Structures are given as structure tokens and as C-alpha cells.
Image (tube, rainbow, N blue to C red; front, side, top):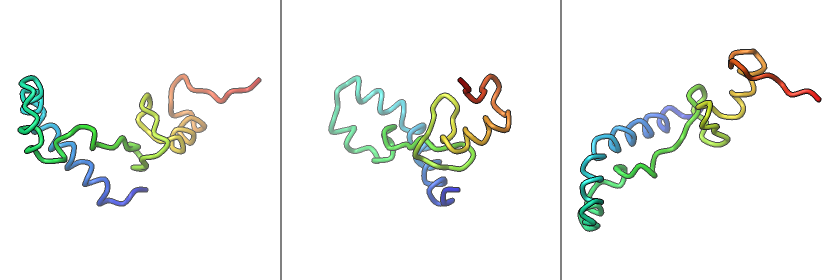
Length: 89
């Protein structure tokens, strides 16, 4: 499990991105790069980190399932993900 502070930091960044999304789009349309630079750093969507919804792990994240490879494997082996079966050939 990831540290709680990291999870909370990512939530705070997501809230900041959402708050400044309209203003960023407007400034980008105007090509006002000085105005963009004046916005907070965390207002940029590239500063968000994809994290596992169950463990908070950031590496090995699978976008399609919203979790890391480790939690995906556990859930798949337990039959919690519909349509996913272990390969055998």
C-alpha cells in the first residue's frame, strides 16, 4: 500500500487540475504562455500520476483495469474480473 501522504497529494493535484482546466484551455487558445506560466504548477494535467485504485501503486499500472499488475493478477486468479481467465496452451 502506498503512503497515505502520496495518495492525498495526488488527490490534491487532481482537484487543482479540475479547478484550473477551463482557464488553462482559454489561455492555450489565446497562446498566452506567460499566463500559463503564472498558473500553479499542479494545475498541469501531466503532473497527475495514474495510481492503482486498490493499493495506490504507481508502477505497473494498467489503464484498462485501473489497477496495478499485482492487484490485477490477484483479482483475476480469484475470478473477480469478468472475462479474464488464465492462459493455458
